[in-house]
Structures are given as C-alpha cells and as structure tokens.
Image 1: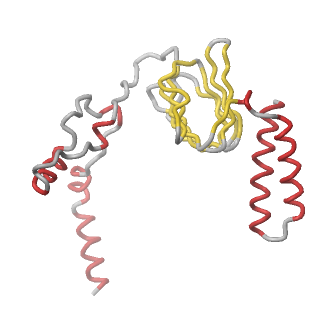
Image 2: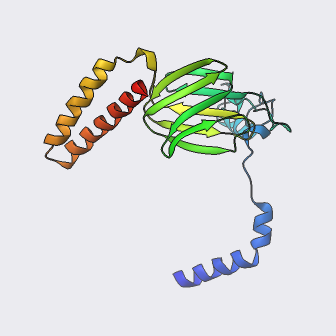
Image 3: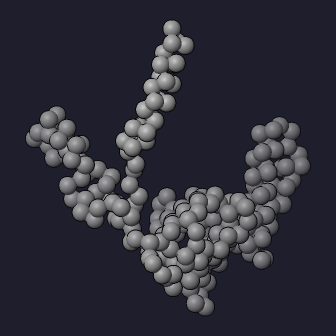
Length: 209
C-alpha cells in the first residue's frame, strides 16, 4: 500500500513538475514589501472579524516592517549599519565607512557594496569605522547579515564597549578558567572551563591587539 501511494505521488510530481514550479509561491524580500502596510494581513483581519467582531484585530508582523531601500545602481559611499542586542540597539541606520566583525572564519571587513553574506560571529572584537573615529565593542556571539543594498544587520547576544573592560579582571578570569580546565574531571566541567578560557582569551586579545 505504502509503495503504491509513494509511486503515485512520485509519478504525479514528475508529470506535473512544470506546473508546480510555475505555481510555487515565493516569499517577498524585505525590499519588495509594500510601504503601505496599514491594512496588515487582510486574510487574518477577515478571519479575526468572524471570530471576534467587537474586538479590534491585533497588529500583524508586516505592519511593523519597514521596507529597505532598493539595491542602488552605483556603489554607495557609506555602509548603513544596524547593531542590535536583545535589550538595546547600539546602532540604528548608522552611516559608516566600514565594520569589522569577528566571524568564525576570521575577522571580516564589511564595506559598501559588499556581496550579500550571512556570517556567524564568535567572541571577539567588533569595530565600527567612520572617518578617523573607531568604536570598538567586545561581543560574545551572534550573526551578521550583509544585504545587497549596502545594509548590514549585526545581531549579538552580548556586547560591551571595549574601553569599559577591566584588563585586570580579564587576566584574573583567564587564570581561574585555565586552572579549572586543568583540574576538570568530567566532560561537562571541561567544556564549561574551555568556554571560559576561549572567551577570556578573546577578551585579552581584543585588549592587547
């Protein structure tokens, strides 16, 4: 029975491949979202009115989306950066010359016109360059999303300005976690100590580098 059903589905998908491909629904990119989202999701609103006609429907996510500018035909002179933490926005639509992020593959510089990229971030130094001004942050982890229209969204779990970090505390923490790693007897203890060593080593490199 299962083989018959599977064979029927496979045959149908083969014969109707062109029709399915033509009717595939593609989700719009953020650059394609209509600027007028005041009406929200009409299907959701209509369904809500049937269930609770006396209560205004809640706003849907699309009503909070702001369409991105289209990809420019010429290379822009500035990179637009959003640097966001779970509890705050460090930078919002900041116009900068360059951002350097600590990707898992190494330090990655992002300039205007950078190819679209998604990069996982590791503990390390993030620097924002605008003329002669350089802002430095130490981040714990996160992701960087670079878009084709010279926008970059950087999301970090934790971040702190580099000048607020106490070098003495970093050295103390590195020494403590190194001792814990050397004396760890279980895999869990070793893993936790290794994370501490890695983070404090990255902190030390950011401060001394």
